[in-house]
Length: 328
Image (cartoon, rainbow, N blue to C red; front, side, top):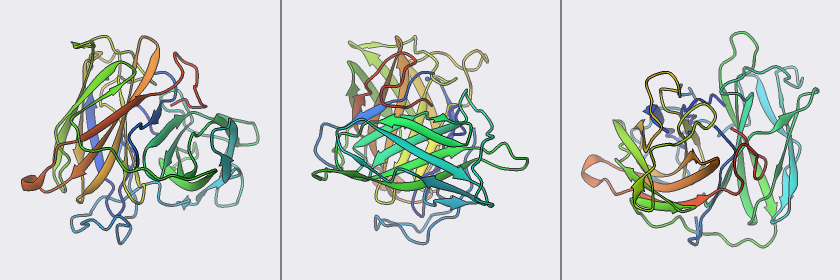
């Protein structure tokens, strides 16, 4: 996934471009489980004609990512289209080129050849994984998803082939079991995860760049020693409610480059091409553990901007291990 804290596409008929950022994130794959009942480069994509969420798309101009299973001659071949809820399973897939050959050469970015995101359709379950690749090009990762329902798999990678650009391909994953949809959490400017409080300041605005700043604190004190996570002090993924178009953001500076400091805040410049509801997932690392803070954000016109809504959860696992098969 063009990692290093860059936003990888999202939006349906929208796909916001989250640009530069300074501040927070190397470690393990984060996991988010909402307890509330349901719900450095930008990528160029082809915008869908309409938004499944039924929200305003008049200002849409930035293409979306993750909405297609094939793009630019590459296809995401998901060999495991279904897994059971609540059980540890192995997810396998292959990226194939235009000649149906498995891709075995990738450009490594931030220590990884490919980044994998899993998200439930109601955006209340989230996984950031780093699968392992076999010599024949087959990728695999252990995964345990707690609830049944529809999920989306996003593979973010750059083939090593000359002239190939970064791609985010998406495929549907079914998780079997008793399904109970949940709504997105109500708006809130702060959220808690694993004993940390994360505050989100700023607002998404259609067609206009704006800054989002996330501050991390614990026991009422700012956390000033955030640790690098995959080469940066923070990672931000945004998913569009309804269609699950995908966007990944990374801060502009990297640890050790003299331009960033280890917290407590990380800032991202964001532009939402159209109004709509988005779910933001911030990954940060502290004391060897990766945590994920989740916020619901409404991109609205300046005169009707709503406050961000937040919920956050800690991902299981710690240090550089993978709690459920992720590594970004």
